[in-house]
Length: 200
Image (cartoon, rainbow, N blue to C red; front, side, top):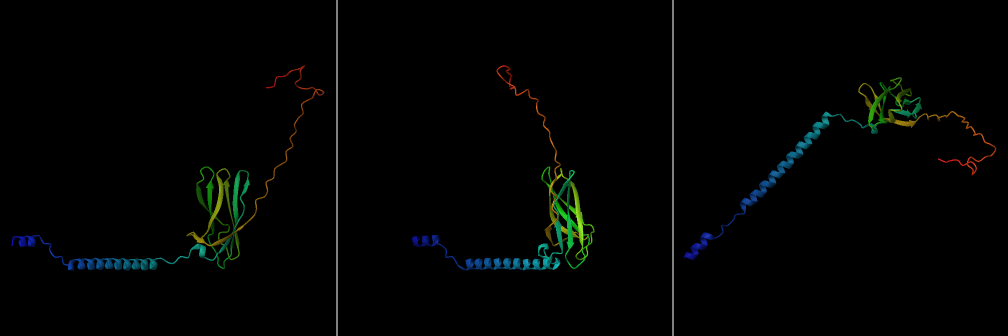
């Protein structure tokens, strides 16, 4: 009798599978709710941001409205002249045109951006305007075309480029250098056994 009571006191209690099944179902339900909520919030955010922002077509995908002709830089009297021509190739009038250039400093290779206005700044279809920028040759090492801007908001316009005027070949003034001959003394050697001279 004692043994039977002992076995009953230390016997393992029977586990029920119901709590584990309920916990698993609850975990799946909570995960599904969180995922559904995240999906709905993401969709709503995409709709809100899409309705607020107007679709902007990238400049590269737009039809070119102008042709920018870039002349080679001209060096003269310590000055570098950068210039070219902009031709309106669209069927509309373009106002407030300026060319955006990136200039690289010779001293520390840093870059800066300059807007160079066109003259005239407004171009009718097929009309041309010129841009010119003069810099000290000792200050800048190179210049690069970055873009074409229009209007007071500096809207970026699509454009194509072409090479313009070549730099004229540099002309060097011929200089005649006359080297005088040392007077010779009838074919005498400068250094002979009779008249030894020290060679430095």
